[in-house]
Image 1 (cartoon, rainbow, N blue to C red):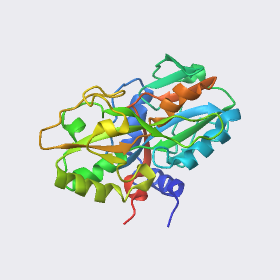
Image 2 (cartoon, helix red, strand yellow; image 1 turned 180 degrees about the horizontal axis):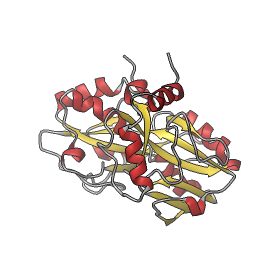
Image 3 (cartoon, rainbow, N blue to C red; image 1 turned 30 degrees about the vertical axis):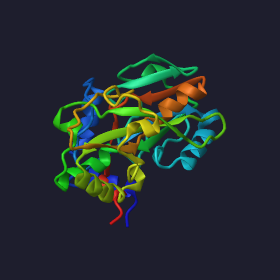
Image 4 (cartoon, one colour; image 1 turned 120 degrees about the vertical axis):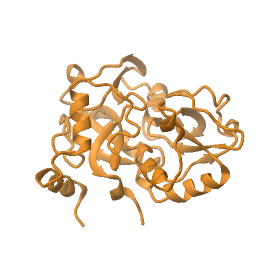
Length: 274
């Protein structure tokens, strides 16, 4: 089986050179700002965390200890804004619609590129995103509420503690999609096949049991409607590093803005276990 990098190379050199994923990145590079849910169907999207090399080993260990919220799907070399395994011409500094810049744990800026902030000691981590398994849910006939309502996915900070590594510790963030009970069972079955993009849910029903006091007021993203015969289903979320940054307060970090993901040239099928 070809590696992800080899498959990307073959696609770009072959008849798939005009990839919808690449088209999306070029549009973001040119300044378009959109939430990426539903963009480039079939292609993996990722969360972003960029840290100085002095913190990279500890953050890598944090992700290894917390694979549900932080499954690493790509990582740059020190000071290199490219990640060829995820896209031949991908530039991590420009190809996400909106970024967040953090200093000492405080959010200081939300630029549309990070050229002015890039440094030679930075390491970029790309973490699996639940947007990638939504394609499989839709293919099975399930409706994704935030896509239907043209909103960002609702995300919540929880009371679920992550395992600490070095200076990194904090609580898990989850994303939520409402389903009827029978649909929820099918969603669990489907998403279990995608462990590299969060896999099965971490909680179903009663949000108060995981520290969510008001389901109508997400900490990130937008609220969506929940019908009386539906239950909220919660998946671990790659926005978790941003919650960890708030608590761990590293001197410098860059992330994506929640819902504004990196669109890669890797196909979602590469992360599915049949």
